[in-house]
Image (cartoon, rainbow, N blue to C red):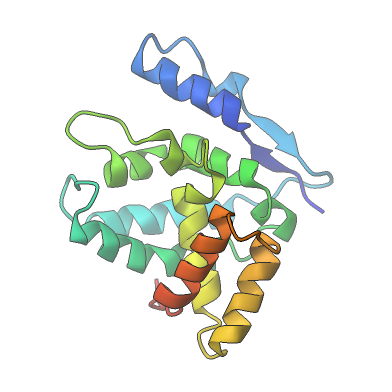
Length: 192
């Protein structure tokens, strides 16, 4: 097991609101550590940031929320995210607070570029606040994780998604997301 950085969603929301107002909440005060043992290596995370910044240069300086170029960016980015966090402890990858840290602290500028529009910041949901499965980087990782299993049957993909999300109830948003991911994103472009 490894130690890894986390930010709790309530702290992240407080920080994002403060960032728009007075800037009184500092990230240094919000970072926590989960897990035990050695700290996770930052090599893969540094590689992730560098590759996403390189990819970003291939796109317009600003994207609108529903810009088709945003979908293209995400399609290319999912394989990068998946490959670069491949060596991160699986417990960290299963912890939504790790993904919140990644979105709010480490890769916030990329997230804001993708989802901030017309002088307005990205919505908290894009950071995984309020609806944890909407965290941009978690979604990208999940798309690639499901996509790399594209050779499996649709039933196997659903089974894999059920393992990721658990057995959802019929009214559970996770069930709808799981089904959509299995059908729409069963293949994710490879390469970085």
